[in-house]
Length: 422
Image (cartoon, rainbow, N blue to C red):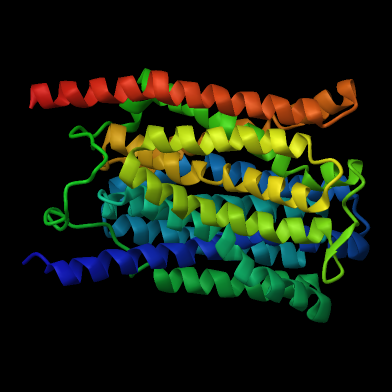
C-alpha cells in the first residue's frame, strides 16, 4: 500500500533532516581542523606545513571518493545503499579521529585524515543522492539544505570542539568526538532509505523539467553536456576558493584585518562569522529559487552577483564595513554551487544513478583546488589582490554566458527530443 500524502511528506522530510545531521557529523574535521593545528604543533613539534598537508589529504579523498560511494549506494538499492554506505562512513570517520588522537608521527595523522576523508565521501555522496531522489519537485531546495549541513551546520560543533581542546587537550577531543560521531552515524544508517517505486507518484509536477531517461555513470562521462557542467563548476569553485581561502591575507594586505568594528571584535573575526553564515544560507536559498525560475536563470543571477561582489571587494580597500559586506556577498554567491550543480545534473541525467552521477560532478571541486595557487602567482606578479579579484569576476561572467547561451539551449533541446520520442 502506498503512503498517504501526509505520510509521504513526513517520510521525505524526515529523510532530508536525517541527511543533514549526517552531513554535520562528517563536516567537523574540515571546519574545525584549524583549531587542532597549533595544539598538535606545540605538543608534537611537527612543522605546520606538514600538519596542514593532512587537511589537503582529507579534502582530496572526501571529494574523489564520492563517485565510488555514490555508485555503490545506487547499486545496493534504496535500503541497503544508505545502510551500508553511511555505516561504512561512520566507522571510517570514527577510526580516522581515533588514529589522530593516538598518532605518534605526522604520517599517522595523514592516515587518520585519509580514513576520515573516505568515510566523509561515502556519507556525502549518499545523503546528496538521497535528497535529489526524494525531492524531484523541490530538488534545488533539498540539495541546498543538505549541502548547508556540511557547511553552516558544522558551526554548531566548532565551539564545543574548541572548548574541549582547551580543557581536555586535542587528543581527548579527537578521541571522544570521533567515537561520538561514529556511533551517531551507525544509529542513523538503518533509518535512512531511498523512495520506494511509486512512492512519489502523487507529488505535483516539478516546474523544472526532468529527464525521462536515467543515464548510467558511463553514459554520463561521454556526454558533452556533463563536461560543460564540469567546466562551469570548476570555474566558479576555483574563483570562490581562491578568494574565500585568502580572506585573511587580503584583509591584512589592505591594513584592515585588526581594525575593531563591532563591540571590540576585529574586522577579520566579524567577517569570518558573517561569511560562513552567508555561505550556508546561500545553498538552500538559491536552490529554492532555482526550483521556481529554473537552474540556468538562477545561475545567471547568482554568478552575475558573484562577479559584482569580486569587483566590490577589489575596491573595498579603505572601508572596513564595506569590506565585510563585499566579502559576505562573495561567500553568498559562491556556496550555491553545491545545490545548483547536483540538481542540474539530476534534471538532465535522471535520478536512478543520481548518487554516482552527482559524485562524479562533485570531483570538479577537487580539480578546482589545484587552481587556487594561481591566485598567489598573480599576486606575486602584480603586487596586488586586485588582479585576482578581477580574474574571478571574469570567470563568473564567463559561466553566466555559458549557462544562458550554451547550457539552456542544450537542455531545452534534450527535453524536446525526449518528448518527441515518448
